[in-house]
Image (cartoon, rainbow, N blue to C red; front, side, top):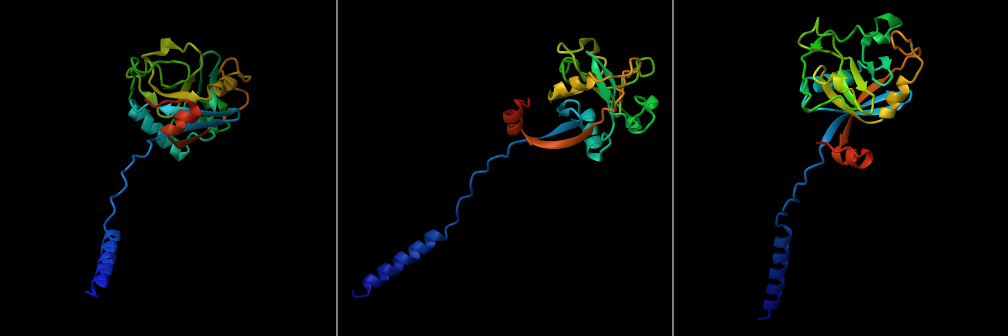
Length: 217
């Protein structure tokens, strides 16, 4: 009988050890907020943020690739038409010869992804420049040149003619400042180079919502 208390104490100690060694249940997995690939266009007048439509994958993937490679850096907005668009992204605009601006690209075209039912030429819409229908009946896009729609009411007469593949959701006022700069009245090219730096910025949907009021569809 005198050993019973010792045995009980020993049993209690062993029991507590067993409890401590029991495997813990893993914490429930909470999915991380989706990260989106946002385009930032940096200019002398500020930044513009652009969303690329997943529904135009050829244009989206191409733009992401060219931006990651730095092709757009130091290109200019070479065509700036008030109450219409600003256009840029031509590698030729990096050189000192302004007469070839608007004629270049990366050496290829992109098949048209026109869907005017989904994506219209509203204010801030980003579309792909291209050659005219008489030499380009399939409406294939230039591999790098793009334009940004300026009017508050958009440019609906362009719907169905060009691929809209993105949207400026922050900083459209920057484009308005660029188009207001003194320019050649014939070519609409600003006298002072309006250069850009383009980079891919991963952003969470929560940040886009909270900081910019932009809701991913």
